[in-house]
Length: 426
Image (cartoon, rainbow, N blue to C red):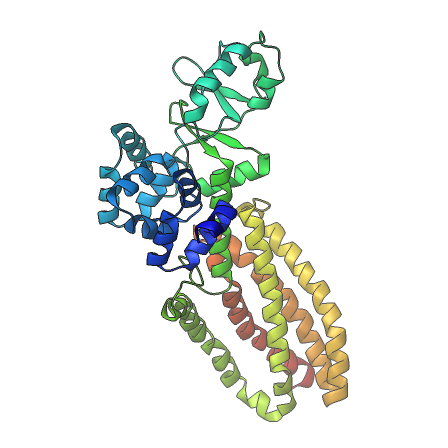
């Protein structure tokens, strides 16, 4: 095992540890040398970090938590039980404890919980040579030196300079002359996911974090931003599929845990599906007169549900990456309705041919018209619901594809039977 661990990179070792039970993971972790231990430990999510820590002796426990980056330690404490949190804080030096407590003082989900306070800040009046000397002196204790905030004597942020700009400039040049134009920053209480998306859009390696008085308090680094985006996207995917987000590794999750994550949504959807039963009951007389209409109910329900699901997924994704806003609701409705109309027209040709071959031209016309109307309606509904959820301050991903599908199934049947009554006169 020691030979296997020596040949693998930290991220691969961390992945294998998450697949292993608590005793085995702790044993394997103890076989790593100290430097590799920290690299592997910081690759783990907080739940698995807790498992590793509980398997360590006090001296090894204290050494690991002391060497962690403050932001990683704050996230661990934010999810750990009180007993683990007390043990972690008790094992820290006073300086590390103060930094960790400061991060935990920010609201959950805010940038302050994810930023690193260990940054190299440069004074505005320094030359390039002096700035490089500061980096050499303070860099070993900082999480990153690639993005360097520039501050006044009172630590008010005035801009950002990159390490590349310093290295490629003349030693006598002033740091103030190298400041990047329109440098971005966020407040420590801002939403962490939004800050991470901002870094993604602006192609930043680091984003300065300031307090209410515009004083530098830390830096959000690219590795934390990637983790934030991955966690948000994982949650969105789970909700879009009609399930609660699963905490922990899938392989390690029990059957009961997986079922528990999915059951609430299935119960909600089965209750919502009673709308379809009520619609069929209401139009029972129409079905009794033209029983051939029942043949196409699964086809129309599947077509409408899939169309609505596609629209909902596209709009939820566009909301997540900032391509659309809640104010774009009228434009989205108009766009998706036209998309549905185009899709419906194409599918109606297939429906018309199949219907004519199976049951005759009259009912085939009903099916074709219904497909056009249902696709137009489903696409508009699928695109609208996530935006309405956003306006109501509900996570758009909660308006998941299965929920849209269930709603479209019921309303699509209403459209189908109303078209049948109009065309067939029943």
